[in-house]
Image (cartoon, rainbow over all chains, first blue to last red; front, side, top):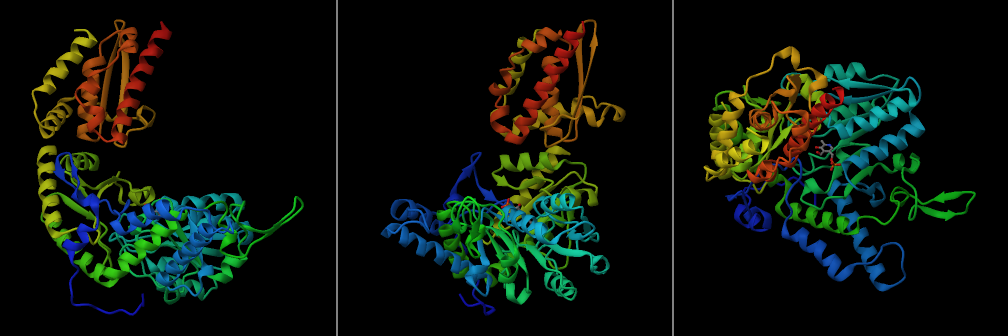
Length: 415
Length: 139
Ligand SMILES: Cc1ncc(COP(=O)(O)O)c(C=O)c1O
């Protein structure tokens, strides 16, 4: 796929797309499923499901191991999947793409390996107030281990990072910055390019948590100049259990292995081990082979539709749903950033999010309720949790209408 | 009324409803009618772990019987809490410890509330029985 931004006039073919997702014709509690929990995980098109089924039916063997034909063929396919990810992120080389089990593991890998080598007593790591626990806890842990300090960029009431405060936090002590590209709770699209530029002026590397960004927007790691970029396959319409760590080759080469074992080595004796080059050095054990294959199928799928078209369509859904929600008395949207992805968190005055979620579920509408693994962010807003509707390109305005009706009904019941 | 008799009464009550919305409406009404407990009794140590919504449970022993009071910040959860109190409160520690509580399944609570919520229910039942056990061993 080329990365040229071609703004297409043709809207996406929603009927055709929906037909690709078998689960969307399912009934839940006797009602047609309306799936708005895309922030937690996305549904899978038949192209991805078939790629995985076909792997087991026709291609199964271990990779990077055998001389036999099946093993060689699947190794080629797996490495082709890596190349698909490389092109998708516009990474310079496939060596910069590490297969992991997901965003969480990618971040843990960087945090632990990076800290081992670069973080010492008195150093600082910067995260933001809107991070997912997966982009807080690994840093908190390594800071504790190394005697370093975790610094937090605050947000304003709209749910945007306060850039002035970020600039103030940058110092000679800062060793790395870890920021969400898009917030899973607020939908805020962070000014990551500027964040990186400012950090690089002080030679500080930046890790982007792209878990919520890749399903909604195209990502060009070279244009962003990101040092590390992490995401999960399952939020990008691919399988669970597979994820990606992109790292600039110069950084990956600097990092010691995180997990060790089979597949990560050049030579092993009981005295010493010489580790393989990147990325294999970070891929201990038999990987999630069908996961990699399925992820490549998912990437091909979104690129066939076009991420620009997807972003434009989802923006329409966001505007439509936001306007409808604002008309309901007592609804307060949490996260009103100017630059926002199709994620809406809200609270309803006097009604618990779990109650709303429970009634909506009875109506076949799947939303997420709770703290969304962002408890510090909930504390910022002084709330226990929100209801979150996150739209994907297979959602429709008709579904939003049903959701609004359902919500009004739930509010009437629960008031 | 014995614990089992109350359970049967609740099962009959829920059988009157033919769809899930009505069952939830009933649960919500039960929740609304449960007396709230005072704020100073809603302490961190009385929060039941395992509930995604917060549930506070208090108990005291009166004339050899355990009296439960409880509250939740979510109304459907509070409805479930109300049911549990109706069944278990004002019984002896032994009766509470031995209660089978088959009604939960019969009215479809475990099946139709999300696992996180049912876990909350399971945790709540466990805490009520632990309280009863504590009173028993004190005697
Ligand atoms: C922003 C963000 N970061 C990290 C994660 C963790 O992703 P995973 O559970 O796939 O590792 C999530 C998932 O909810 C997320 O939304």
